[in-house]
Amino acid sequence: MFGRAIFGFLIVILIAAKMVAQRPDLAGSMAIRMPEPFVVDSSTLASPGWVRPISPAIIPGSGQLMASQDRGVVYLAVEAFLVIQLISSSGEGTRERDRYKDLAFTIARAPFAPARRDTTFEYFEQMERFIESGPFDTEPSSSLVPPTDELTYNGSIWRLARETFLADPVDPDTSSTEYQSALAFYRERAIGPNFQWSWRDAGLEQDLYRQSIKRSDDAFRSSTQYLGLLLANHLLSAIDAFVSYRLSENGTTAQLQSSLRRIPGSYGAVEATVGLRFIF
Image 1 (cartoon, rainbow, N blue to C red):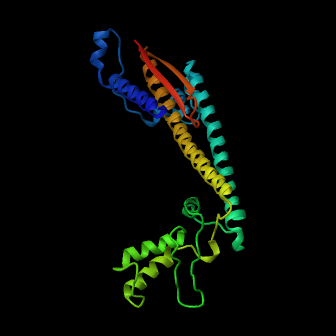
Image 2 (tube, rainbow, N blue to C red):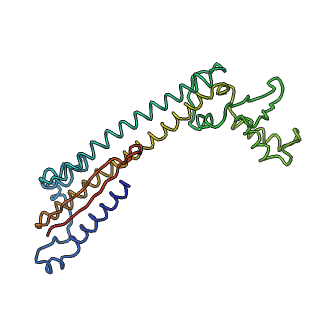
Image 3 (cartoon, rainbow, N blue to C red):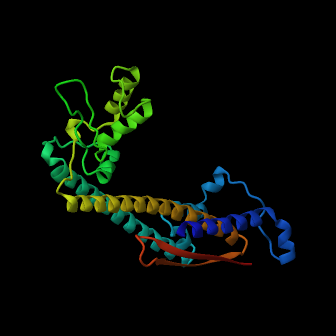
């Protein structure tokens, strides 16, 4: 919702800038002089006047405040709000990530005396879905014999391997090349002895684990959104300051009316209403 408001505001500003730059004939009908199409050269950029339209790219609202435009406070307020939310969301995501990893290590993986090593996020996602990994090999003293319990992760991988490569998944020919291909598929994807897990007799802890993963995902997703909104606020403030600077050179002013509120019941979502009015 906030993104759509920003996009709409950008469209309004860009249309206004194009109108000002490309319609000098409009000036005659309105009895005012509109700016001619312009070309920015190095000597123009060296002018102190260009500090005002450029500075908002670094500090949103600064260019507007230099021009005594009250809407500069809006950009600064939005910037402060988004920075606080970004830091809060990132911190929450990190805390919940550490929490679910601790639960995985101290509860689910503890019976297997594992070394504390990190791995891909997909591994932790599978720990949500399956109560246990299952053994990698049910007969370690002989050739590889994968588990057949399809409620475990390794058992489900072995079923997928059989269904993918074997004409008869129920009673396969273990000497065939297809069976060896299925074993190779299983070896590549199954959970090995160093990363086995089990949530047996720990259903409550697994529920807490799932909740922590969800909260971590939500928080990191929100932090990404807030980062995008921060960049949009910089860009929007810079475009606004640039257009206002060009218009002010010709006696035209622009007024911005906006509001920002948190959406009740949402996870850090905000709603913004933005309006722009040109005064000739």
